Amino acid sequence: MESLEEIKSRTEIAVPGAKVVIVPNANPALAGSLLLDHQHAVAVAKFLRDDPALKLDFCSNVTGVDWLDRVVKTKHKVVRSEDGVDTEVDEERTAQIPGYLEAVYHLYSMTLKHGPVVIRLRTEGRTENVRLPSLTPVFRSAELQEREIFDLFGIHFEGHPDLRRILMWDEFTDFPMRKDYREPDDYDYEPTPHGAVAAKAKLHYPARPAQDGGESISKPGAAV
Amino acid sequence: MSEQIDESLKAELQKQGVLVTSIQELCSLGYNWGRRNSIWPLQFGLACCAIEMIAAAASRFDLARFGGEVFRPSPRQADLIIVSGTVTKKMAPQVVRLYNQMPDPKYVIAMGACAISGGPFKQGYNVLKGIDRYIPVDVFIPGCPPRPEAFLHAFIELQKKIDAQKLVGPAQGSHLNPERPSEFPIPVFGAHDLEPPANRSIWNPKPVERS
Image (tube, rainbow over all chains, first blue to last red; front, side, top):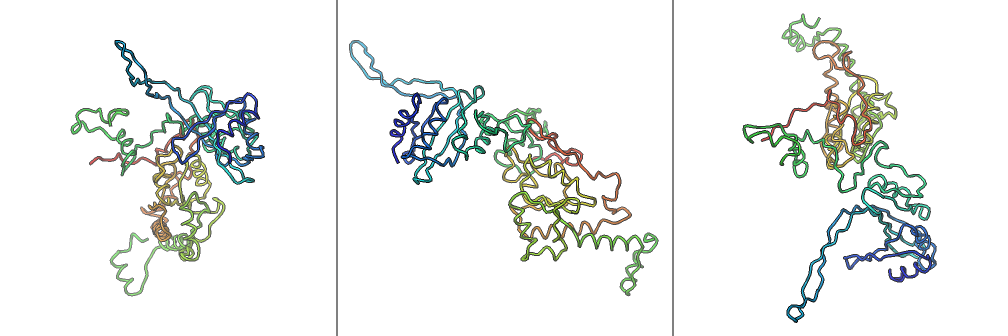
């Protein structure tokens, strides 16, 4: 199979205006992935599916990723001149990267027996503008998996034929796979708690003012 | 009446081969003998524990030896619901609905760690932490999953429980009490969780004592 760079350059020629960014993978054993822009994502997916050299006709897996707001620190070499002497100094720069949701597609070719080629789509924000173009019209196997991402991450896939919740009930309003999701607190009866369950159960323990001094320990949200 | 017969005299007569009893006791005996040896479970499984339940019903372990092989595909014909597997919050209202549709007297076996407490999935966002939060459970079987022998043991325990339910007197079966509810409220799907998260009229455990 061609390298990602070749796929990127051929895609950008075949789909005019498409912006394809190669997202490198830190693991040397794994290939990077292609980040697509919303406007041309469906056309690019069609090209990847139909191109005779690629024929990526099978979308095996679609999954979601929740990226929180993060601060990235990078080191830059900066030349400083003091008293006419130039010295090279490491300067640390911080960059604020706002969070976003991501859909990741793994494409394989059944006819040419190669793959995977990983493509990514990113939303503009984590809670606002969580819209992405649906690739279900191109890969039918993405239908239920995009529904699952809609259910658990809350990404709206535009152009999806039947976008409903698939695992949770229709009345449910949360998105459990988002990193800021908090589950309902029903750890009030834990006879043998340990680990993370013990920490949640402690909030429900009856107060023991004689031993613990005051009632602070039993208040929900108090120190554990 | 049985109350009028001296218990020691009764025991003495029994040693001599004379059985003294009352009509009610005799009826209880026959009634419970028939009920306990012909329990019709609901053909219903939720997860991997169901495979062990099926194994217990199949030839190697043979639930038919204890009279429980007639799995019914309809709750209207079932005496026993075996909650075998993880009860998701999406499934819980359906389990309660099936229980409500069963005719009295009816019994519940909670099979496996998940049906008892949520088991290994108890921290999941969609896992009910024990079916006893919504319906009264007669026998709990711990295990992940319990072996068919454990299931048979629970079945025999249930038979003992049925045997102890007399027609009259203080040991009268709770299903004969007209005050006892036969149906329990079905939880509704809420915005964040099931509403209510537990039926407090039947599920009210004592606060856990810290050591």
